[in-house]
Length: 56
Image (cartoon, rainbow, N blue to C red; front, side):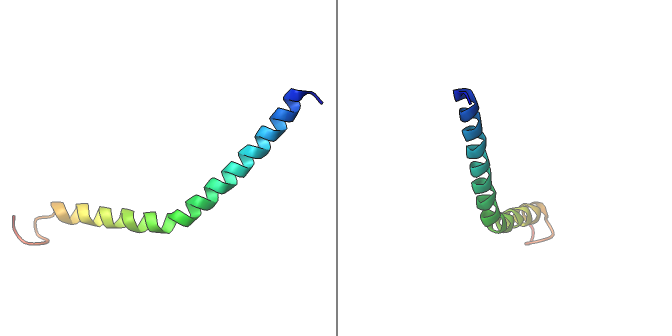
């Protein structure tokens, strides 16, 4: 095997490890980010609606 083949194999293994780590992190952060996103969406919907929250 040449050096390029060894480097290619190590790069592929490293890429797989990083991808698995990123997916685990995304799975842990999914629920909190979903809750924050829903809160921001509700806030923006209520902020522009004149009937909710009284007249401005």
